[in-house]
Image (cartoon, rainbow, N blue to C red; front, side):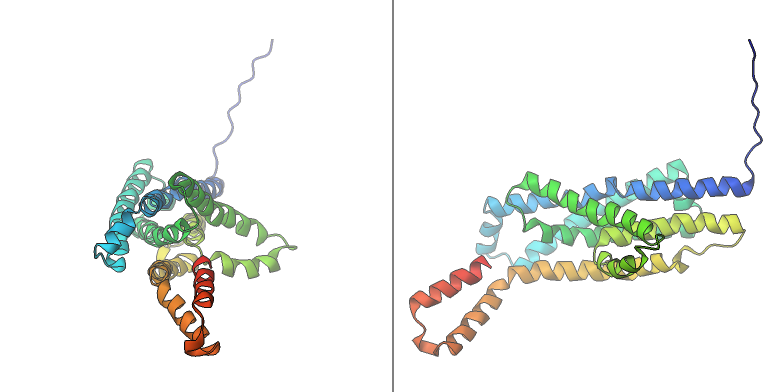
Length: 272
């Protein structure tokens, strides 16, 4: 028989960096999957409190709706911050330079991760209004996060390089950026890939100078404020309904508006 000994030459620095770019892309993509679970974990309690009338009991007992949601948000944001610290600890233990290659790189990764949690939590509150079961809510919010994070990021990365879909991607990316998981995923991929591109070219790398990272750093806080405002606005939607009833009364004859017609308008607005 024949015995064959294979001793390939080691990879050059450029080849090694190219391999690391691919691995960093895969790492950034697949990190989005477990990080879709954390925001989804806040939805079951919201739905359970609403269904069991615990929330209603607090509100009729004098709790201000803003205080109710702010208390939830502060607690969930604190838990999300602990998750972010744990994730950064794992990145540090594995020593992946794309995430923690320098103090600036680690700081940018931690900041994007933290802001993602702050923006995704109020979005989960908004999603919770779509569900009646707390267990279904957690699964549903998880699916939404996976779709707007993992799926949309992957679709964007593929569509932007295909000639037939590049124009559609340029239009769709503005819609994608409405969702915190997409902005987080894009920033994470930019951090890892641009780190290795800088290493490959022998150039210094500023993670905060990345376009995707900079965009995420101002979009995520704005989205956190927007979605939390929507949650608070939903609590005061009765003011909107009262304004519509007043407008309907004025248009249909003011005081001559019948009680039955008021009931029909009120029921229609309540079910809207």
